[in-house]
Structures are given as structure tokens and as C-alpha cells.
Amino acid sequence: QVQLQESGGGLVQPGGSLRLSCAASGSINTLNGGGWYRQAPGKQRDQVAIITAGGIRNYADFVNGRFTISIDSATGTMYLQMNNLKPEDAAVYYCNRRAFRVGRPVKDYWGQGIQVSISS
Image 1 (tube, rainbow, N blue to C red):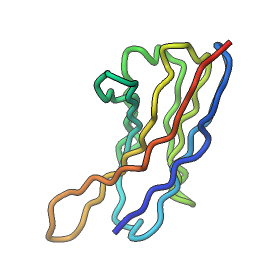
Image 2 (image 1 turned 180 degrees about the horizontal axis):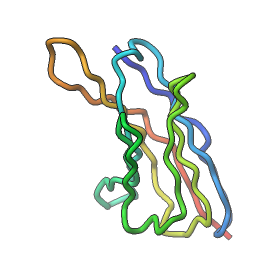
Image 3 (image 1 turned 180 degrees about the vertical axis):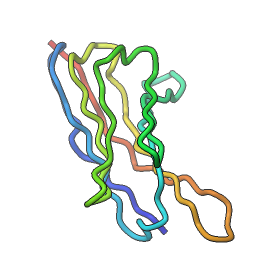
Image 4 (image 1 turned 120 degrees about the vertical axis):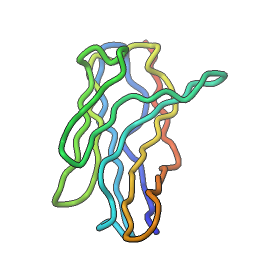
């Protein structure tokens, strides 16, 4: 079992920055890559960024070079550094981690979600 704890959300002005963190506990030895997703009220949950075990990163088109996803291999914490935030970035952000378990299917774990608000 894996538990994910998100932190670092809050309220920032347009053009500001936030760093989201996703700390993992439990059977973290099973974790491989992961990603960040976001969902605004009345809208679909969108993929923001993913990172593979090999360090390959992919970003949604709307990121446009503003965000960076990373994993600290020492702690297992996954981060999303967000710069030049725009009003349309306001959403609940969710972290996702993928677990590989011997003899069992791949399993995805999700955080509880954390609010990012943009306001001038």
C-alpha cells in the first residue's frame, strides 16, 4: 500500500510561482514514474505532466515551458514547479504515482488533491 500527501498549493497572483510536493509513504520501493493532473469545476481532469522511471518528461501543450516535473530519488518526493501562473491554471491538482509489483498488475495511486488559486 502507498499513501500520497500533497502540499504547496495556495493562492498566488498571475505571473507568480508555486511548487507542489507529493510525498509518498508505505511500499515506496514499488513506485516507478508518476504525474500531475488537474481539474477545474465542471471540467475534465487533464494531464499536466508525467515523468517515467527513465526520467523522460512530457507536458501538456498548455504548460508552454512554464512547469517542471521532477522526483527526488533520495526521498521519493515528486514535485511540480509552476512559474508564470495564469488564471486558467486555477484548479485542484492531483499527484499520481505508478507502482510495479512482482506478479501483480501495475497499480496507480492518487493524492487527495490540492487547490491552486490565481487572483490579482
